Structures are given as structure tokens and as C-alpha cells.
Length: 503
Image (cartoon, rainbow, N blue to C red; front, side, top):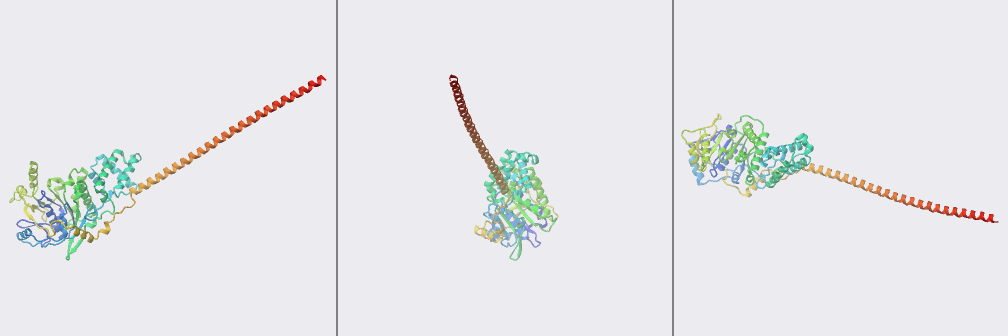
């Protein structure tokens, strides 16, 4: 809800509490234990930013936030709040676009493997430094060879290719061990079984589709983009890495704008602790850099988590607008955390902040927003306003209607599969097989030729041997015949001579 000066009216103590529009991009925090009202507070903020004409993005863990698509209704509790605050809620629907990486509860949100990048892949697969180095080399080889990495089959094919030809790449890209390639392949297989084949690919999501403004009853409203995250949340590393990719894409897409009267976009990061759990140094540095610099691009980031201590101090210190719901303190560690949270607020002499943190009822919060000069106001105990949209989920039929009316079905409805690394490597393999078959055929023909020549030579030799033997027999017979003939002739001559002498 906006007040007469277009300030974001989201909570009420003994007076209205506002977020100054020009300070809304100084980021924020919604924190509190389970069941304390964080989801409703998130809906209230998203609706109010939409009223201001500012589009936003948020993940829906249980489907409850989908109710923003439909006008809310008056209840006894809300009527009591109206009388208490002295306001009249105007129940109304808001423009909503539904997204779902699993493609069942919203339009697909796809990203190419190349755009997702090595750092986030290393995050979701828990790669060692050595394995991350190998993956970096694989990405670089694909880039140098102009082989696009679109989906998981591209990356798997590229890993196989690099692994099988590791010696050829060693000089230019460093050592690539078969063990590291195998480990990455196993992790990719697990990622694929989690649904990775659905959200890595084309068409890649266009961030500009988040920034639309629509008119409802003649009034401009910022688009509320909702990601169905109930299934995605079951893969916490994947969830946090995917949202980090979205935030990085927004950061890279948007130009520097400096200080503005109101933000251009608000990004709500629910279950934010998942982003920082076991995060590498490189990822933490990337997060801190984006949070620090993205506000100059007109983007505000609001983290939602159970305990503010889940967020690194360097990031937490940049969150100027705070909505802190109740905390629980069952252990000494919890009590220490409550004390630290209380000390993080600008103290109010009329409020025991630490005690209040343990006493807050559902829908109540400790509030501290930045004033017009960018300084934090003193902390106040307040009650959050009620949403103008429906509290709780819409029906599947209503969700389906919203998707049909969004105009995004034609753009993202069908998966594209262009010629990329997988197909290119297949062609290389096929060409290699054809060459191997050609060489094998030539070898076989050469072998057959040699066998024919060998057989011919053998036959020639056999023929020659027979001819030689026949010739030898002929001359032997002839010689014997001539010898016999000669002997007979000599004997005959000798016989004739003897007869003459006797006469």
C-alpha cells in the first residue's frame, strides 16, 4: 500500500512505517523463525512495490504466494487491523508471471551451460579445486573450438572428448586427469537425475521479461514474477545456484543509473542461508560484489531467512531496510544469536529489543527502515499490514489461466536444440569412424591384393617347377634314348666290321 506521498506503507506501530522509495534499492532483510509471518511480509512488500510500479521477483516455496494473482477478501482479523490502523484496505489482484524450472507450474526458466558458468557448476556439484580447474579448461576448450555448450549432453560430450584427448590439450590448458573428468561426469549424472536436463538448454530466459509493467483498472502495476520452488528447494545447492545465476544475469544486463526516485527492480532471495552454506571463497566474493554494486543499477535485493546470522557480515551490513520477526532461543547458541541481532539495530530507548525479539507475535516485527538521508531509523515494534491479494494459493485452473494470458508460451514453450558441442563432436566421431572404416577397407584390399599376388606367385612357382621337372624328364629320356641309340649304332658298326674281317 502507498501513502499520499507514494511511500511504501508496509507496517504500523502507533504510526505508519514507510520504506522511502529512493532508499528501497539499499537492499533489505526479512527474518524470523518458522511460523512468524515472513511469507505474508514478503507478499506485502511485493504488492507494495508493484503498486509503486516496480517489478519484482520472488521464489514461492509452498505455493502460498500465488494468491497475489487474485484479490483478497475481508476477514474479522483484517477488519480488526483496519480499525486499529485507521486504514481501508483495497483488495485487488496483481499482475503475475509464473515460472518453474520443472515446467509444470509455470513457464520454463532455462539457461545455457555456458551462461551458467564454471563457478556455479562447481557450487552445485561440490567440486574440488582441481576438478574446478579441469572444468574451467573444458569450458575454455569449447570456447576456443567454437563449440557452444547449451545443455548437459553438450557438457558431457565435451568432457568425454577432452578426457580422451587429454595429452593433446596438456600443453595449452594444463594437466587434465581422467579421475577428475570421471568425478565431474558422475556429478553431472546426479544433476541430470534432479532435473538438470530441463533447465539447461535453449531458449535461454530473457531477463527483460521480468521488467514488464501492466495496467490493472487503469493503474500501472509492476509485474510480480513468481518462481515455483517447492521441488527446486529439495535440491538446495541447485536452488541457491540457480537464483544466484538470475541475480548475476540481472546485474550484468542492467546499466548504471545512479540514484533514482524509485528502484527499477526488486529481487527477493528466499531461504537465503542456502546461498551461503558451504559457499566457496570465490562465490562469496561474487555475492558480496553484486550486492554492493547492483544498487547503482536501480536493483534492490531483499534476503529472507530464519536468522540474520545466517548471512555473512559483509553482506548483512549492506541490508538497510529490516523486517525482523520473532526468534527462538532454546539453546545458548540461540540466545547469543538473539543478542547479536538485537545489537544490530539502531537502539530505541523506549524498547527492550532483545526481549521483544522473543515476544513478537505472528505478524509482528521489529522494523528499521532507512530515512531520506540513508541513515537507519531507530527500531520499532510494529504489526505488518495485510496483503491486498489473496492469502494462500490459487487453484491450478487459475494458475493455468495466468500462464495462458502471459504471452510467454510461444517464446519459451518449446525446447530448442541447435547444433552445439554434442552434435559437432558426433560429426567428428562419425568422420573419424568413416576414416577408420576407409583405412580398414584399404588395409583389407591391400591384404587381399597381397594374398592374390602371393597365390599367383605360388602358382607360378608351382608351374615353373612342373615345367622344369618335365623338361628334365624329357632331356633324361632323350639322353637315354640317344645313348641307347648311340650304343646300338656303335654295336651295329662294330658287328659289321667284324664280319668283314672274317671274310
